[in-house]
Amino acid sequence: MTKKKAALHNLGCKVNAYETEAMQQMLEENGYEIVPFAPGADLYIINTCSVTNIADRKSRQMLHKARKMNPEAVVVAAGCYVQAAKEEVEKDPAIDLVIGNNKKKDLIAILEEFENRRRNSGNAPEGKETDWVIDINHTKEYEELAISRTAEHTRAYIKVQDGCNQFCSYCIIPYTRGRVRSRKLADVCAEVETLAKAGFQEVVLTGIHLSSYGVDTGSSLLELICRIHEIEGIKRIRLGSLEPRIITEEFVGTLSKMEKICPHFHLSLQSGCDATLKRMNRRYTAGEYFEKCEMLREAFGRPALTTDVIVGFPGETEEEFRVTREFLEKVAFYETHVFKYSRRKGTRAAVMEGQVPEQVKAERSEVLLELCERNKRGFEEKFVGSVQGVLLEEEQMLEGERFWTGYTKEYVRVAVPVKEGMENRIWKVRISGERREGILVGEVLA
Image (cartoon, one colour):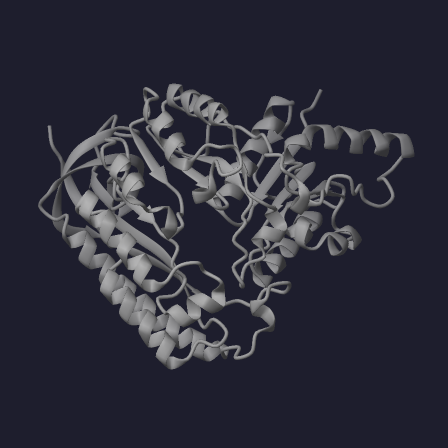
């Protein structure tokens, strides 16, 4: 019997990517052949994103692309766009099945039911089944998904939490992902143990609002980290995006004593101006945020601090932008992801007065990107001449020569000349001042 061919495409965040890999493994375990997202598949699954209006549009484009690649295939829309625009999705003739968040775990059963209905009716079922899009805002169930391997060979992203209770004024995610729901601590540890036995050296803990892990179960992110730290085989634990308020003396003091913890902290900022932060409904001030950064630097010496910033938020004046720019200079982040504010229908910010013109957003973005590049270079230069542990991940051509590249605990990318048997091992590397295509070059020590 010929295997059915399935193609998956992921849009959006690391949580989405994890869920897409989990769905792919479910399909493989149930006899599907996984093929590239190209013409010829029998089944196309697009795990959609809805964080911005642009993300919605990309989701629609990929769904229609799938339909064009094979008009006879089953096209499945899954995830956040489905939750945000259920009625619109159900009317779209390009889509056969809609599967909302918290229903991806039932993928195989849903596909089997769809096929049974199609066989019984003699063709594609009329309309779309809607029981697979729940009211995500009124569930306390954490969706149980798991992986035993990932597309990456050295680092595994692990989803430990879903949902968000913050309701930032620009964000639709609480409405598409629901309230905070945490994965059972034992289930996370079991997955980490499986991945460690499969040879993974590093795990990255991710969630929609990672800092909230455990608030619904009586546990905490710190407790989870402590448990994972005890698992043999895992050499590194990296944390996904954190809220500044989780950075306390206890949290930092405990982590600083753990040798597996990567001193790389992504603290979501969004603005360095208190007035803007208030309109965003962020629950800290720039001064409080700075105190958290100093706390981390005192405990870890030279941690990599990274962040996100939105420019052109409604009402952002030239003065407010100047305050943010000066704050970024003061903190001197390793990396800063700069986003131009994108209006998102259904959020409070979308109807705020003082919407900033696109040209102004673009100009402010360029100013910050230039500053961020200087900060990044400055941080990396501090590693020149030092010996660092580098987890080598992939072989690639850099300026005509072959190198292995990988990352330090601080997520500084380093390239070393190719030798046999280097992949998926942590090597001691002396970092020189040389760069290849912007990547620091180092020498492996015997």
